[in-house]
Image (cartoon, rainbow, N blue to C red; front, side):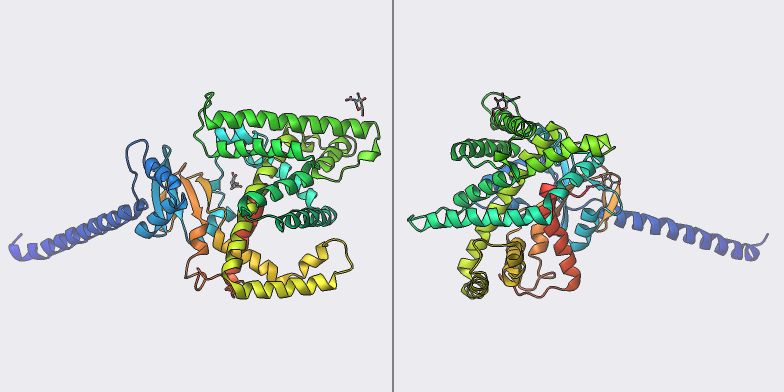
Length: 443
Ligand SMILES: *[C@@H]1O[C@H](CO)[C@@H](O)[C@H](O)[C@H]1NC(C)=O
Ligand SMILES: *[C@@H]1O[C@H](CO)[C@@H](O)[C@H](O)[C@H]1NC(C)=O
């Protein structure tokens, strides 16, 4: 073979080599780009403890624990990773991620079972139940919110609030959050177990307070720890609930109708006693442990979040005279129409269109629950980053609520703001999460 006939072969070979090289290069480049994009940006901090120290510092600084998330989102963008208490966490703050994760259409996200929380609220609580158990519990609790019992709640709440506010007139200073916590606590206890005795309410509120504090404390059960205090307080709350259930059963069996109660406990016990006779499905009967754990859960979920949302609302109204004027106008009009009624009724609430917009706007600005935690069940990709199975992901709701691309002038308190249709539905997801997820999360 002479060199001339060799030429095309070499060219061919060269071409092949170049093509192959290009292919290899391309995949290398792609791989390189891909692996650079693989894990979300962020810092794992120190070995083992990660960024736990920084987190604790911002918890104890005047700015609050959300500052930890806020500063990192500004530094790294809408998706970043960190490591807290020995676990990997990713924070996400786009509406797309929020929808994918909260709706769980892919079935890839679940809630983490936290042993220390289960020790405090009980492992029969909705907060800790498995998906199957959760469905059963939820179907029982959803029945509690019939039109009839909601109407009764409106009346009870109105009575309570009028009574509490009339006391404010004679006081020099009112510490809003403290007083509102008391009102919401009373409201929850009335609605759930008809507890109205002041002394019993006070001691129960103290104990529930210990349980709440322990939920945020380091889960070390030694005699001097906050966690231990919470466990002991849980025991006392359980005793109160046991006693209440015993008394109710006695009243029902002795047909003592002087003490007829219209509350959640009564409804749950009624289902309980009818259940075995009328329903063939024994698995749906609630046990005493389920009832007790979930009453405690509902007290905790209903009290704190509602009281802080109300406190923020009063602050926003104080800063926005125009909104306040609109609100007063609407309320005065409704009060006039309903002047013949002794109490506020369910129908009156539906007429408060401006007030209800104002409540939603307050929830948006305050984001009482700043993020929603989930666990990834299998390796997946979010916002172009790879997220490993077992990783904690947190939907940073506060950041979305204050995103100028989602809400124009997000820091302005404007109940009349027009939202894009698309956004409203996301907003509703959170509203449902705000209210429902805490009390009875979607299975
Ligand atoms: C999401 O779906 C998966 C698969 O069906 C399920 O195991 C998981 O519990 C669901 N997550 C939530 C929060 O309901
Ligand atoms: C039920 O209550 C009555 C008093 O109202 C009491 O005498 C009786 O012992 C109680 N029964 C039980 C089983 O607790």
